[in-house]
Image 1 (spheres, rainbow, N blue to C red):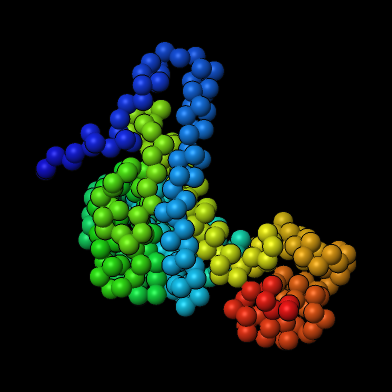
Image 2: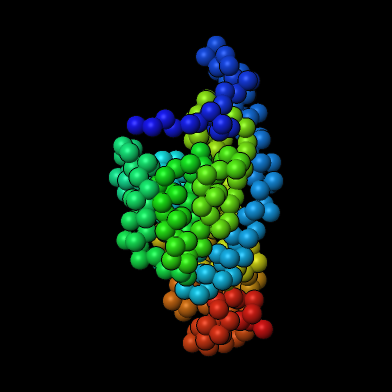
Length: 299
């Protein structure tokens, strides 16, 4: 087996501030972890110019054309993608639009699957199984920036005309060379050398928050700062849906509850009905004619 060179990666370097980590008191250890974590938001802020092209391509062009946002990664990186994709369903009412792929399959979420991240062909095959098309955006997540599973997926995505995006926690990453849009952050060496579930994982989570939220804003899933396409999968979300209707229209609770039921438990439709005085059918037509954007539908 050939040598895997890691010495050039920031995520693999030793952190000079934590060379004696095993001798610190618990309080000292937690303080230095917190101090290092403060570097993460700034590192992500510096990457915003790289994130903007993703939003323009991912939301404006692909999602509204029937495409999907497909995250793929291995280990912590892949798990974060799966989490973000799963959360999009209740938050934004998505069905097929956001997908999370983890090297090794669903079982790898709980237990690592040996060798899965080193298999570039597996990355391609997972996208083939998803029936990837040129309408889709593939976002390959790799803290190290060198994961073969991700590279294999990005290469396949580009070969069929899909948009390939990479997220890495090292500058000048290998995955970035295989992407149309490369998002790269550098938050410095980890507190625990090479443990990219720490600062790197936090960087990735913040970036994925931006990618999915901004994409969904551009996809008509938000009115003001309200998640008007929320899918009420539990009692808390049922009540949140009614509160969203109240906040969007300044109506009372009784009106919100009634219109929520009349709308078929669809806050977006209820909001348009209240603000325009139209029927459910008319509200649905207004929304369909305006690509789901409430602000345009109520004009």
